[in-house]
Each structure stands twice: as C-alpha cells, then as structure tokens.
Length: 153
Image 1 (cartoon, one colour):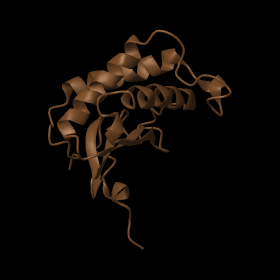
Image 2: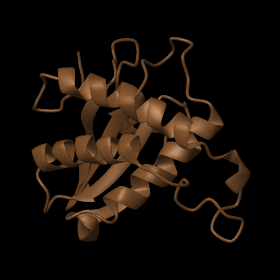
Image 3: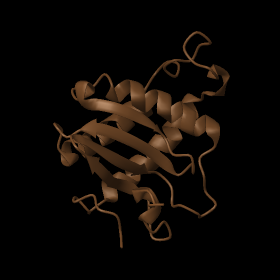
Image 4: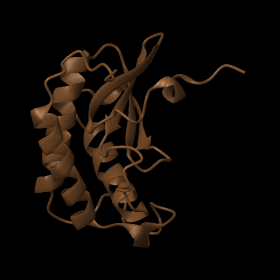
C-alpha cells in the first residue's frame, strides 16, 4: 500500500512553520505546524479546539473566504491543516494566516461558537488558550525565512 504524503515527511527535522503539504488540482493543503513533532510539547484539546474555532471563523470571514475549504487540527496535536483553492498565492495565504493569528490575539468577547447550539463540546473552549497558541505561532512565523514554504530536508 502506498504511504500518504504526510508520512513521507521526516518529522524529526520539522520545526514550527508554514509549509505546503500537498497540491491536488486547484487545492493546496497547508501544514500550519505550531509545535515541533515528537518533542513532548503537544497542544491539549482545549487549545486545539479553541484556536480552531477562532481561526476558522476569522479566515472564513476574510477576503479569501470563498477559497477556504477547510481548517482543522492535526491528530498528532502539533498543528493544523488549512486547505485553500490555489486562486490564492501561498504568500497571500501566509500573510492572511499571520493576520488571523493577530486577530485571535486581539479578540475581545467569547470564543466564536461557544454555545451548546453551536458546538458539540462548547465547555472545552478558552480564549486565553487560543491567544497563547496564536501568539507563540505568530512569533515563529515572523521568524520564517523559507518563503517557498517547503519542508526541511
């Protein structure tokens, strides 16, 4: 059986950053790697869940909303996947990612979707957890020099 592409990436050399994971027709899957894999530092469920609510809402209300297909956490608890139509350049998606992270940091009010009617586990949301993760990841992206968004070798 063929291995899926994400299993062919050497996770021992991955660091927090923004990567192009794959391209399928007109859809680009971005790897928003917030943590170094296999380093013992994983997002807890409330952090993943909260940042998912915030990021998904802000990006789906951005200027690229019509091109956003999906945003959600990785099961390994070290990042998120963002799927966007290639009408948007990778650099534009990178810049929008930084903008959305800043919006999350600056957000006032409750986490988006924080009610029983809107979410299946709404009690497990924390704006503070989302802000901390967004700030940490935004700092990593500000340091990123790889503007080809390729995985490290």
